[in-house]
Image (tube, rainbow, N blue to C red):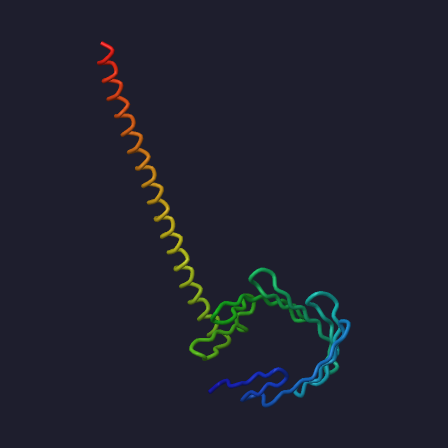
Length: 172
């Protein structure tokens, strides 16, 4: 078993990391967090989704925000972008940070990125099949309407010709 964990509100128990607990407090955009594994962190909110922090003597810059279907993370080390679906998260900038869950088994890294690529390929085929089916159905419906109108037009035209002949015959 590669991975086993339990996440509570302020406690995390995992096979490899052991037990981790945290206490945090914040007010007016300033915060203090004490974590049993990562030590003390002080942070200041500098804008929506962005904060500056100090943890174990190291400076932190963290920005997390969502734009459309994408989640973006910005830090000192760079930018990361990901998209979530019902099977996990695909990180399109750093694929090794992707995750994929199937039958309760969580897969991470390159294998998860490969599985996401297969899943997205299948979804793309299904999407185009739906578009093709809709196009065929709408085209058939428009053709039937056109044929019904044409039949009605021809029927009315023939009827008017017959009436015109009978009327001209009465006039004589």
